Amino acid sequence: MPAEPVPAGPGPRRAADGAPGHGLEQLGAGTLGWIGRHLDHFDPFAPAHGAVRAPDPGGAHRPAKAALELALLTHCWTRLDPGDDPRRAEATVRVRAIWKHPGFPRLLTAEPRGATQYRLACAALAPAGTEDAPFRAGLARLTAADLAPAGRSPYQRLELRYYADKAGVAHAVEPYSELARRNVLVTLPATALARARRRDTAGSPDPQNARDPQNARDTVVPRPDEPPVTVPEAYALTHSAFYLSDFARTAPGLSDGAVADAAALTGRLLDHCVRHDWWDLAAELVMTQVCLGLEPTGTPEGAAALACLARAQRPDGSIPGRSAATRASTADPAAEYFAKAYHTTLVTALMTLLIGTERTP
Image 1 (tube, one colour):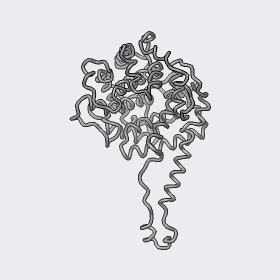
Image 2 (cartoon, helix red, strand yellow):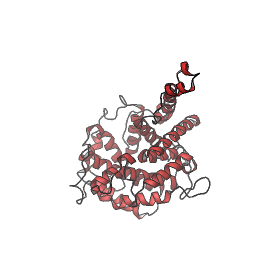
Image 3 (spheres, one colour):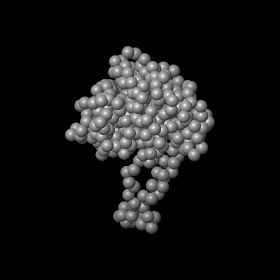
Image 4 (cartoon, helix red, strand yellow):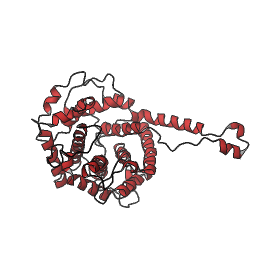
């Protein structure tokens, strides 16, 4: 794991001008409160909700995913704030109960393509008191092929190494320093600039009409308002920042120039997310800023993203979906609303914790 600590100050941070952190406290209190009131929905074995899950393409895969994301929240929350927060304690108790349930290993392997990663994440994020839980037997069944770096992209190898290391599972993935040099945080900024230049060229006036302004305007090819990179590439960028920095716990192991380039691309992506109300990606990109050593409330794009999320937040504290275009309706059944809202709400909650709480080395 990278070992250089990222410094952080105590308590909720403030913007550079001294103003409160763009609704940060309300975002944090609201999202964490909503999660606490919906722990049964994160629990695939809760009797009140186990039989009424909303239809989902992942089938049994989704309940495992929701539980793993809750475990990630409690894992990071415990590291960031070792105090006696009753909200975190209640969520951790629920995670522990899920991890000890004999049916949980079956959910982890319900989607074969993600089974290895889910088993590793489960072990990596396991709370104290689950040392003899049933899921641990699955780790022993992982083969060398399951853990082989061959055939995986640099990003996929990084993800594999991150969770395998935290789970204490041996593997053959290259060191973090090599993974960082090949990572999208380093390679994607140049790719994005090259694409932008091609779009600029495609949108230039026809030189033959340059002397006639009216014809020149007529022959310009309009550039679509598209993000600087694809959405999957953007998520690979954010997750890479999480893994290389251990969720802002350490420096990401990049050169100063690479950090600057990654931060600039993150800023351009945040601008696009704010314009289009892409809430989930906006929250992850704000976390990326933190992982890169930036102060989001002190950057225009970070402050705008926080304000965007604050506008999206419902009175119950939830963020109702990944984007305005896919938001849940208050008329949706409870299980369907949860399926659409839980991920972005949880990511936003984790974002507020990374920004606002003192970290330990």
